[in-house]
Amino acid sequence: MTPVVSSRALGTGSAPGVVVAGGLSDPGSSVGDMVGVAAEVRVERVEQVRLVPWAEGDFWLLERTNSPEMTAHLGGPESEEKLVSRHRRYVELSAGRMYRVTLAEGGETVGSIGFWEREWREEWVWETGWGILPEFQGRGLAAQAARAVVTEARAAGGHRYLHAFPSVEHLASNGVCRRAGFTLLGQAEFEYPKGHWLTSNDWRFDLEAGEG
Figure 1 (cartoon, rainbow, N blue to C red):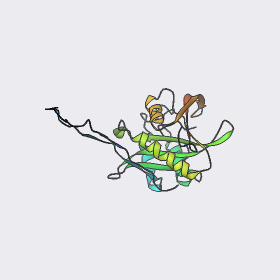
Figure 2: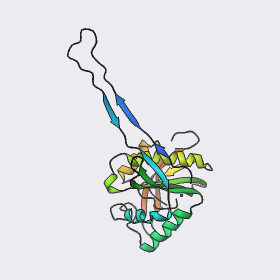
Figure 3: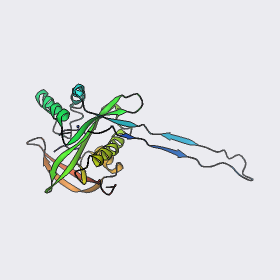
Figure 4: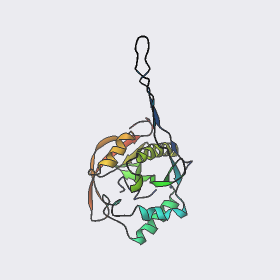
């Protein structure tokens, strides 16, 4: 099982997904006898992200996301041997895909995300998980990446639902699910890693309906 905020599971296929978002607020300008009221326009820029399919040279990113800080809700860092095995699964994944998350402008790597198959409540579904590097957190990049991976999972087809299972204690990850349009179904218990029980929230996105 792979909770959100670290792509700890299987995960790598299609064209990179790009999310573009922005906002414009214009209170208006003075008219008629209104004097001294100035028009104000505020442009709010939201950073864009791109999903780049996982490649052989991306092992360094697994090492970065294997820190105590980023694995606090996942049972702690993995051994070098397990990281190497995970990297091979990411590169060779046949159902689903793992990605590096990069800034659309400049291409700087900010984290990872992916989607893969799992059996859940007697049916096969897609599962997603992600990790944003500490220096890029708090900028809304995870939610943008999650929206982009929804697009990728929908294009891949095969399963109606995309699930995410963040720890109930990981408020930031649950917020990402909410902002990305997932619907909260309830809680579930997972043993991940072996010997470590985790209470997670079960968030679901209905890929056929176009909304959670």
